[in-house]
Image 1 (cartoon, helix red, strand yellow):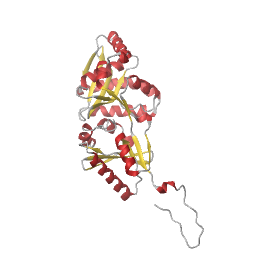
Image 2 (cartoon, rainbow, N blue to C red):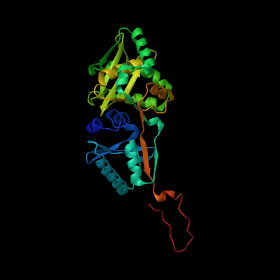
Image 3 (cartoon, rainbow, N blue to C red):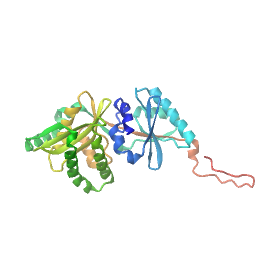
Image 4 (cartoon, rainbow, N blue to C red):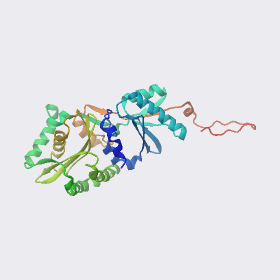
Length: 312
């Protein structure tokens, strides 16, 4: 019920990060257990991951960088008042440099498996040029094998049909036995009833009247974030076909497609790279370091007059 309050921030975002989207926050909220606050028209997300509290870099509704920095100050005050160690996550590249300047001594990571793949939308609409010859060949093969194909916008009155398609797809997906794959399918089912309430775009690709692929996306700033893209195993060319048809139907007026991360799946990484991203967008984790962090253990002092107590 509350996530829709984030929609104005996500629609206006300029970060090119898929985490700042309704679909992402809704699908993965059980995994990250997020909380939120709004300060000076900046959205601040706080999550618990791997036993640590992480704060997303503040997201301004108007792109006001100075307001975002003031929100960083508010996060610092919150951490002091609540004795919470300060960790930032989902920090865009430009903001990472600001945090380095602010704290001087920081540790930061940019984990490869969570970086987003960003593409020029026009390349998906046309698959033009020799670089996309492979995708064109797959599309042509699909059209040849499925001459009665159609692509249509999702009709919520036919939700049961979409769920039935996902069940058929799931029978192969679950066989992988991967934790994230299982979790993702559970969240895809949860997302389907939210397509209309969240204002998401959904399209289905049919062959012989039967759904063989579908895609669900969301407008965020100058990009269309692709949350879900599924095709039945064994339907040749269905993936590049649904990707192109979805871009043709829904990406008018945006410059980029964000096809999210690869979660460290090497097969998925190879596939995403074959579509030639214009950028693999970094998501930085930044932790300010303090002098006391250099103390590995409490020093031992032998004295009858002194009591050494832990410093909080």
